[in-house]
Length: 493
Image (cartoon, rainbow, N blue to C red; front, side, top):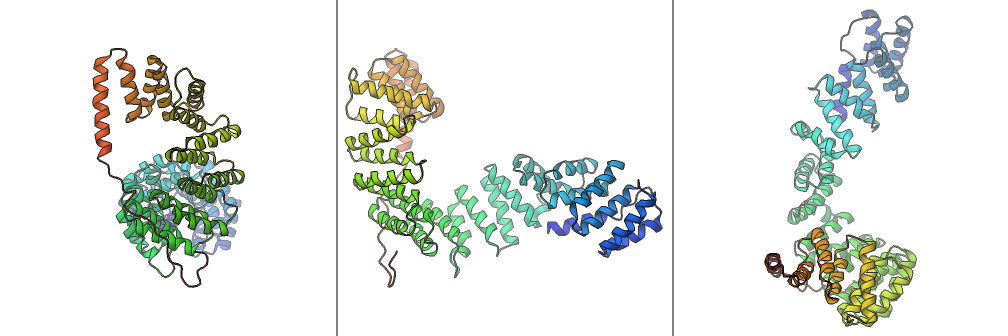
């Protein structure tokens, strides 16, 4: 649609009258040949005319059009720019230059289009091209401003709707983007990408039921789309329909058995619903097919950690780190799992080993301090001093690390340093006003200073947050993911 609009807009350039230099008899054969798309003939006639009239910007423009028709875009641009050096505001040459730059995705189109609009603010085609060009350059704030007055104009233009929806998504205007993509789907109902984009922004706007409905043609066809199945799984899980989420992921794995991300997503569902053995079984299938994938070892390591198989968990996480050194966070998660199961010695062992390899990791320093505190480190002991040192290191290497500030505040309170505890609490609350741990510690620190008025206000905030939290139900235990009975001939799944 945009291409046909451009062709009409471009064709008009050839017949815009101007003050003649070459006479009408000279111009007419060039224009006639262009209209008939006889570009060689038009080019020959233009070159003949330029020998007699080398400063006629109209003829230079027509020569550029003939060159563009022959797909010699560099030469065409040179001709249009020659015309514009003679007549800088000549509209047909500006339009022709803008069209070529726009079609090639060249960012120089933006400046030319802005000049065209300044000369003719009613030129909606130029405005639409400018909005698309800005979007192509990821200048989405500008693009949205340029699209705004064109809302009705672009309702039948798929390319414009695609870019408009893209920029709304980039600017996190998900509901508005969903409306734009919905219109695009109406125009091209059988195309995959617009329908997937619509479902994606619907999930971003927390319209999961709508997303599921949008995806139906993509997940119920004879050849379901794997990405659509994966997105549907996310939407079903967010909508509280875990069995359907599991079904979507199983189907995706069947269709794309060498896609590690699908096994990791399945493991995530199993971790969320305490279905650890099923998760292990599925990830093992993935590892047999993709044995060198770090993310699968991380997923299996975390699942082993939840079942208390720490030696297996450590082995997997160490393998993952060898395959991809950027997976230190998995060891942090394993230590957290061991703590959750009350195995503080194992957690401490895991963290100390990781700190040898990553001595400046704030998460590991925080975890070391937390484990020492949970083991009962008392003020004055060497364990307490080590915990204080590690907590300080955590916030020094990552100043916005709220849990580190919370833990350091608690240690300062135990050491009787209320002023320092207060300072840490205020840092945490500046980053996260709903941090209940920081509120609790700040109340304790201020009580010792006699600041009753602020303490009363903080107590009210803390109680309000606790009431809000207690009213949020958890769906963790609603579903258990069950092992699927094997099919005949199904050796891998």
